[in-house]
Image (tube, rainbow, N blue to C red; front, side, top):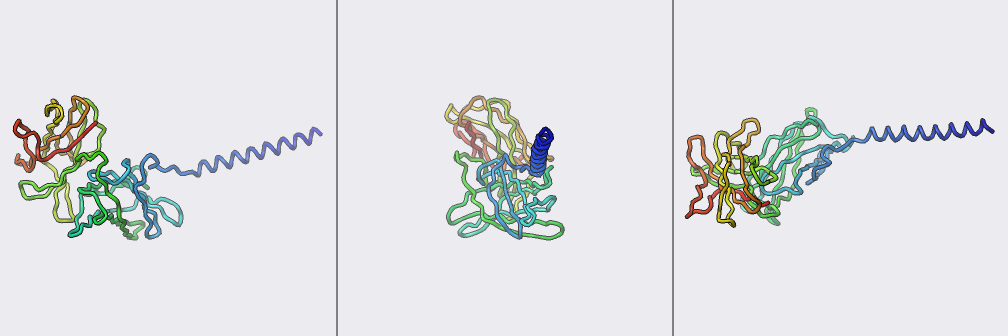
Amino acid sequence: MRTTILLIAAFIFSLGFTSCSKNDDEDQNVVENPLADYNLLTSFKSNGHDIQIYSDQEQFTVGYNELFIRIKDDDTDAFIKNADISWKPLMHMTGMMHGCPASAIETTEDTSVYSGYLVFQMPGNADEYWDLTLDYKIDGLDYSTSARIDVNSPADGKRRVNSFMGSDDVRYVLAMLPMEPKEGVNNFASVLYKMEDMITFTNVAGYKVTLDPRMPGMGNHSSPNNEVLTYDTTTKTYQGKLNFTMTGYWKINLELIDENGETLKGNGVAEENESSSLFFEIEF
């Protein structure tokens, strides 16, 4: 009887050990999604691949969009590492087509994740829309795919991007990078591109952007300790400081100045002129 009890106990123990080992193996086989904390904006299948585009935003939005891309092989369910990717956004208007500023796409520390940004100047609608072409190379083979994407105006209606003709007869796109504004001095950044043709935009270096934040609802007062945006060669962005003395609606009046000191767009704020023709809007 004692021997039987011992055998039963050993059998139960072995079942438990096998179950634990199986669970441990399953846990080890679970691959965490490095973009689990981001929003999947769109995905589309092409060439035997599942293309996934993520962002910390909830949608493609007019202005600056930082995006993350993954490519999954449909046959193996594995995510492709170290692919070479480029992209071309294209706006289809009723009478014309044009592109928008687009960064290079780089491989991140997780080599199955690729990052870059797009700067959309306008939203789509029922008759006019954006599509995005991705060209990519995997193990020496070239692939290409295109998909329509929905680009929306910011939910708060605030201006975060300017598309304009400079006094030098060059068309520019100036966009602020996303930020979480707070009272006091904030780091502030923008990207500046010029249009070479309807499709091609190039990053502009060596200019500067003056900042004059004002509160129109509070006597149009400004704030001290703002720092001009100057070009940072590492990030290829314009970096400066923006000081908010209180919460509320702020209009960030801007002047774009080239390397020769010529003002290409914007103007100073004065009693007879309460706003620059070039500005961003922030409310918090």
